[in-house]
Amino acid sequence: MKKFEELHIDEQIALGLVVLEKLAESSCNTLPDLLKKEGRSALDIWRNLCGDAGLDLCHPWPGFPEGPGKLPPARGGDRPYGGDIQDVGERLKAILARVRAEEH
Image 1 (cartoon, rainbow, N blue to C red):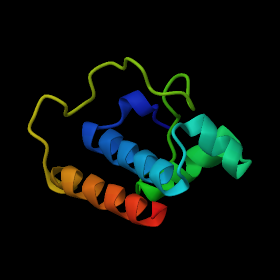
Image 2: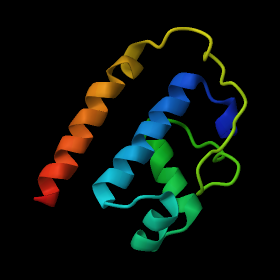
Image 3: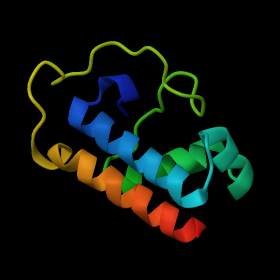
């Protein structure tokens, strides 16, 4: 089982997007807030996050559920982003629009 910091940059970004999406959908500001709200363990949440990102289970980043902090450079991080990662801005805009619409 890989550690988060061993994942390819595209996988790390995909997982980060899922985390942001879950936080936005739950109206939580942090992963610890999400854990409390859902009454689940950090590892239960992590398994779901990995699955939702389409990844095999990996170990969470050091200090999870707190933010990842400073990590070593990710494999693939030295090249331009490609594939699904290019639509990050559009995906985030859609998430924010959905959350804002639900607030009103």
